[in-house]
Image (tube, rainbow, N blue to C red; front, side, top):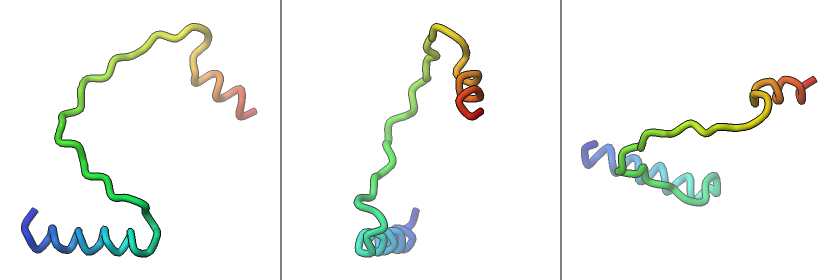
Length: 55
């Protein structure tokens, strides 16, 4: 991102803050996303539970 683009983004973020549309601007993490592990659950699949609750 060049200097001009960074300045435009900073002005945009500040206008969002000033308008009260957001409370804070979070910067993206520089750390790589680690591999996610699946967890085991007991009982019926979550998708079945969701479908039953929607009925």
